[in-house]
Picture 1 (cartoon, rainbow, N blue to C red):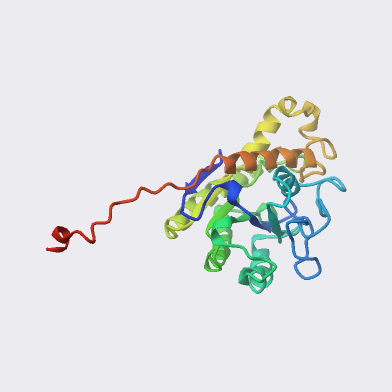
Picture 2 (picture 1 turned 180 degrees about the vertical axis):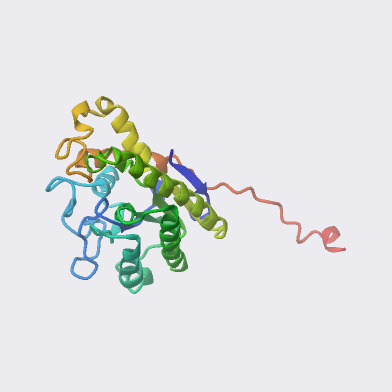
Length: 287
C-alpha cells in the first residue's frame, strides 16, 4: 500500500511553498494545542505550544508533527493541530465544525492562510476500528470522514493529505487476534482509497494525497535493523518502536515524518499546457 497521488490540482505549488498545515486526528498526531487556551501558532512558535508539545510518545519527545517542523528551515511553517487522543471520526465534528470553522477558517489577522500555501491533513480511524465489526461499519464511518472533508473544502481547503492506518495487527496490542485485526485494517485502507478517489473526482480543483502509514510501519517491522532498531523491539511495548501496546515511539514517529516529507517533496506542482488565444483572430470569429 504505497503512498500515492490521487489527484493533482493547481493549488499545489510544491511542499516547499506550504506555509500552513492544519492537522486533524487522534493521539498519533496530538501536541495538545488548545485553540482557546493556547496562543495562536506563529513562525516563532510554529506549534502554538512549547516544542514538542505534549505528545503520546515518550515524555518531552516529538511525534511526527514535531519532527516535520524541525525538518523545515526556521520560521517557514505554522501548524494548527486540532488532534486529540482517543478521538474518533465523529470527533471531527468538534475539531472541524466547532473549533476550526468558527475561528481560523475565517482567516483572522493571526492566521492569514491561503488555499495555495496550506495543507489539510487528517489521520484518524484507529479508535473507530476498535468498535467496528464489519465492512458496512467501515464504509459508513468513512462516509462521515468525507462529509467533514467537504466542510474543509467549503472553507477554502484545496490541498488534502489523508493518512491510511498502520498495521496494528503487528503491534503489541493485537497479538491474540491478528487475522481479524489485519482484515479490519486492510478493509479500512482499501475503502479509504476508493472513497478518496470518488470524492476527489467530484472536486477537480483539489490536490489529494494518500500517505501510507501502513507502508512506513511495515518497512520498519520487516527490517528493524535497517532503521536502527533491534529485532526484539518489533512486539515489545515500552521498547524502541512502540511506546506502549499501540502507540509509536518518537523514533518511529521520525520514520513517519521522514516518509511524509520525502513523499510530499516528490510531488511537483501541476504543469498545465497553455493554449494559444485565437479570440482576436477575425477568421476564427467569422463563423
